[in-house]
Length: 202
Image 1 (cartoon, rainbow, N blue to C red):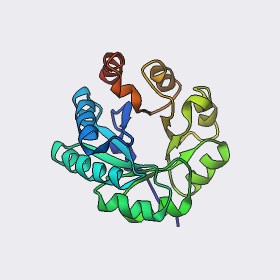
Image 2: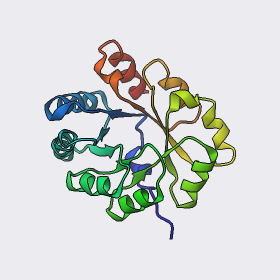
Image 3: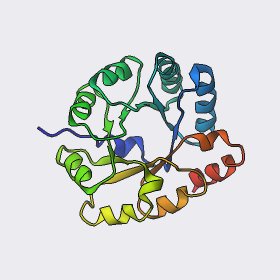
Image 4: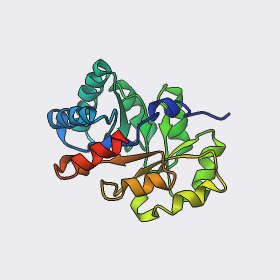
């Protein structure tokens, strides 16, 4: 039986950027999430690799619900991570690779999964399971030419480029067919904020 993550059609509608905040604690993560939301970056991902990360996810997800913003859990690599993400209030899950068991558990928990892919084999396997939205990781190493190459055999695939993305290369990747670019540390750099805000506005 196939599953679906077509809900990302709505989650990422009009969202050229997604913010990722890793390991910063609840207070700092909430501050950065609110900054992202003020820039028009409505979708935020928080990797969950510690109890501190889970606390941050719960705080930011609650704030997101009040503000009408979506907060997902990242680095979800086990069924247990799916359970933790759901209990902390995540709206979706993101994984560095494709694990059918994790994707299925996430979908069954009501959280659309965004699995990571880096090869045509992985894209094909994920799409065979019904997943059309995929995280290309690490995008900066794959290169922007990877995306039009994948579009030939997999025209229905929708890619989120993650890994090494910032204001200097985001526009290039979006121009090669990427639907959304995920940025992390770049959002802490005041010099990059105007460029990223300009990207969101276009």
